[in-house]
Image (tube, rainbow, N blue to C red; front, side, top):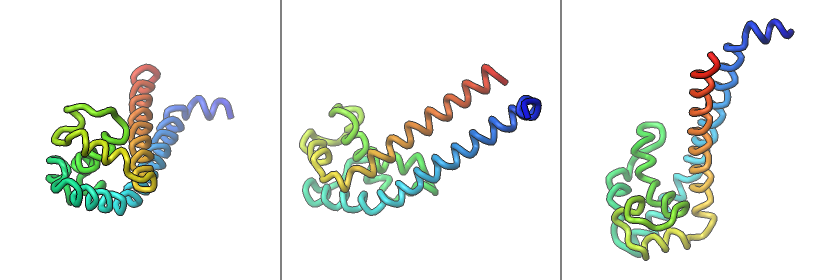
Length: 139
């Protein structure tokens, strides 16, 4: 058994990495499906109170995680950055402090899914960086 593990170390490592990435992507996709409805509710509340969505959210309104993941992140960024980060002009571009505070004070049943999705994205990035470093140093 020991010799089998030694001779197939690279294959086992790659298989574990691929399975971990697939599991993380499935979790991110499930949170995307849950957040789809919450995003439309938040966007409607935001538009009723302030008029238009922020610039990037308006441009990426129809983006999906499957078709265009980068644009999807721009779409939900005005929610995620308002929930997770303190107010600043870079992450909250085009938003006043009142708009930022409105997003932060939304009910937790609308915002918890976005917090979970952000954590999953961060974990996925950490896993990818660790795998790249392991490949560079040990293979």
